[in-house]
Amino acid sequence: MLSLLFMAKKRKRSLEEKVELIQQGDIALHNALIDSYKPFIAKTVSSVCKRYIHESDDEFSIGLIAFNEAIQKYTPEKGSSLISFSEVLIKRRVIDYIRKQAKYQNLSFDGSSILDEDESPGSSIEEDLSLEDYRKKTDEELRREEILQFTQILQAYDLTFNDLIEQSPKHADARKNAMEIAKILVENDDLKTILFEKKRLPIKQLESYVTLSRKTIERNRKYIIAISLILAGDYVYLKDYIKGVLET
Image (tube, rainbow, N blue to C red):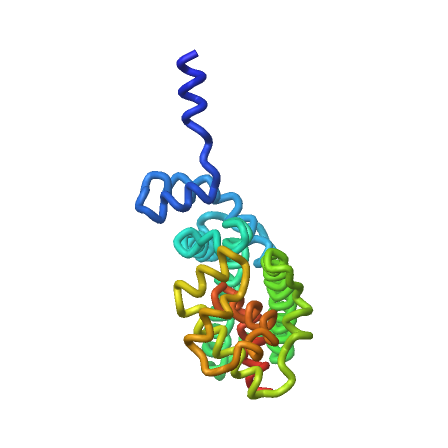
């Protein structure tokens, strides 16, 4: 009977609860979590490299560092699980590593005026084209994953990804103003808390920080919410989209 009570009290912690304890300084739990998720890290890295990855490989080390980074950066407010968040982060870091290695090798090759006897310039061009094709495919995959993750978060706000596109202000000045409101919101902890916890735009509070009318803010409500969520999250491709919108 006592053992049953003990087991009831010793409830199995969720992954997110473990992360919270790790962020508070539980080193033993930190090491145990990383060790238990090494197969997940290897699988994720292998999916990018298109080959089996061993723990002795440099790419695995990059994935391990990225997973640790995900643990430190993760917050429930991001709207996704630690697994999906860390998966995206691992893939990004490994792709960055591959690109840097390829760039370094190309520079070394370009600096040499001598080709191996069995190596022709044509084979180098084919390799470059293959690498470029790989980059495009991985970028497309990560972009799709990022949009899917963002779409799931938008559902909590009764929004869709199309709202980001369809509700975009037509004039450049209006878009810029909406972007500025979103930046103000994200940089203010009180305003951001209202957005994340109550799932609504704090229009009344925002009026104290901007010169725009309440009507203007309300008209662009959906767009401002979507942009705020992008700015507050770890969205590489969507942030590039925002830059593109400002430039048009």
